[in-house]
Length: 156
Image (cartoon, rainbow, N blue to C red; front, top):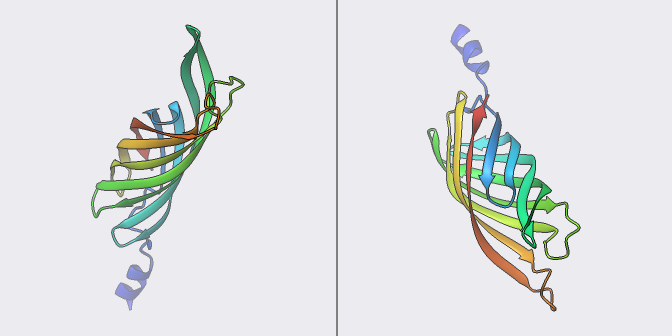
């Protein structure tokens, strides 16, 4: 009877560190501080939600400016140990009044995620394709632009 009760007390998810905080450089947000929450784990497939806030540096007529950004992503990662293939889709809102800058980016993510199941170091490296409307185009056509991102933080 005792082994039955002790087994029943184990958490359903192998990933006990289901929260993470990290800084990301690159991608659609420039420099962002982020919170990630692991929402589901089934076998070697896990899903999470990311929300961040940051600053995107850019230049207009040679003058440096900073644009506030808010990235949101739905992520899935596949792997049995700490190293995982990470895939995702997202939306980054850009707070700008500049007519030459897009208001948002739709994003994808293809990358590598290192996160230990019990917590600790979080490292991510990703290729992020950006889709946005070109504000300078007469027809408001969409542009697909490549970007890369590097993230470093901790899971707990």
